[in-house]
Structure formats: structure tokens, C-alpha cells
Image (tube, rainbow, N blue to C red):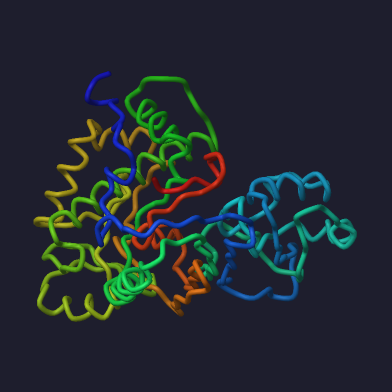
Length: 362
């Protein structure tokens, strides 16, 4: 393969450095769906009127796309008419908000399906769209932790609360064995099979996500994870805007308080550009990938480009111990992965076959 379409063969944990170094404590997750609970924090309540029904749905051991397909058949509506704010893992108990056309109200009232419960439903004016949520609340169990490691895990957890968590895209984004990234790179290079629609968007976004992770790992390796650099594109912690860092000495205290975060690239023609050293680092990451700016322009409707915070803060965070099990509770902003937290604390294993819906960091 040429440099242009070469797919890195490193294991994810070696390619993308942990902030706190390799953890010594092993643990098992997702022994049952009850071990992994997540609840969406909605961006707004239902309006009480409108052409859609905003439904709070609890699902068990089902992926979001599976739930959408089941609802589509049962309610006799097209899957494209059903809106979701985000995708939730399969092997979990998850509460999330889903919108369906209001004309399906009668069928929804009679809806019954294994693993799916409609908690509440109310009229709303608009179809729910991706990203229409304030965040996600997690309640996770890590089982069979090694004895004698509690103090180390607690110390690492405290450091994450203080310094923030690397905002890596989780392995769900890349598919089994990195398949999505590999296919996306081939498409950007003008090679391989063609893809369309949602599949094409998924494959191209996997490449964007991998390059973002590469930049984040570089920043960690250079000791710059918690540093404000001149030329950084900064994101406000409340996600309401970006600005260019002109005076690092002014922005650093805000960084230390986790009020602002430096951002990394989701490459595309409309992405806000950094300056100085951050710009040089991003240019080098893109060049090392064998891709160029023209590759993103060819798919500009799907890869417009944006910025993503390189870290996130843990909200409402707690860690408790029950025999050899650790219970973690915290809230994350939209788009952040709970696996990014877990991999800093534990050498995580899962007793199940890897899948695109649920796959461990290894």
C-alpha cells in the first residue's frame, strides 16, 4: 500500500497515549447490561404541541439503530422520520430521547417490544436531531478489580477530575479492527469500493476522528495537554463558542479551572484554523496521514470540518468501592465517550465478542 492509503497497524492503546500512563488495575465491564447505565440529559423539554412526539425510551441490550428499526416497523413510519439525539451502546441500559411523527400516537400507545419501554411521550414541534442534548449521565460498574489497587485508582480518578479527560473518540467510532477508518481512507484516496449516504458519512467521519485522536496523542506526548498555546482555537466549556488564544498567560488560569479547552481538528474546508505552533502540529498530522486539504474538499458536503475540544471535565463525579467492584458515576458533555474515562483508570476487559456497538479499549 502507498503512504497515502496506509492504515496504521498499532493497537489503539499504543497509538493513542493515555494521559496518566498505562493503569495497573485490571477490571471487567459490561458483565450484564445493568453494569453500564447511561441517561441522556435533554437539551429542552417537550413543547406540548406540534407534529412530532418526543419520547423518552429505555432500552436494554439493544443498539439505538436497532430500536429505530423496531419502532419503524411497529409504528408504520419510515426510519428516516424517526429522530435521535445520539447513538447509545448496545450492551447497556440506556434512556434516550427519540422523536416520531405524531400520527403514530395510537400505535405508540399500544407498542410493546422486548428490551424497549416507552417511559413518557409528549408532543413537540420539531424532529429530534443529532446533538440535541446537553450531555449524558453514566452509572458504571467495573468488576473483579485487582486487590490492593484502590488507592492508585482513586488517585488517578482525582487527577482526571482536576485536570480533565482526553476527549478521544472511542473505538465504537472506528468499527471492528478499525475497519471504518481503513475504508474511509481508501475512499478519500480515490480507491476502494464506493459508499453512499449514511455509510459514506460514517466512513469519512472515522478518518476525521482518527486524525483528531492522533493530534490529541501528540499533544499529550509533548506535555501540552493542560497548556494554553498562542494560536490555539479555544472552546468554552459550555460549548457556546470558540476564540483564538492570543495571550496564553491570560487564558491559562481559565484552562486550569476547566472553563475553556483547546481544540483539535475535524478536518474539512470550513474548519476554523489555528495559528502558530498549533497550526504547524495539525499540518504535520495531516501530512503524515498522506491526505491533503483537497481530499476533504471533494466531499465537502459530508466533511465540512469543525473543531472538537481536546479534553472535557467530569461533572457530578464519584467513585465508590463494593468488595472487588468499583462504581463510577459522572456526567459528560455531548460526544464524549465514557471509555475515555475508564481507560485512564483501568486495564479494561470485556467478556464478550467485539462488535461495532460495544468494543473494549485494548
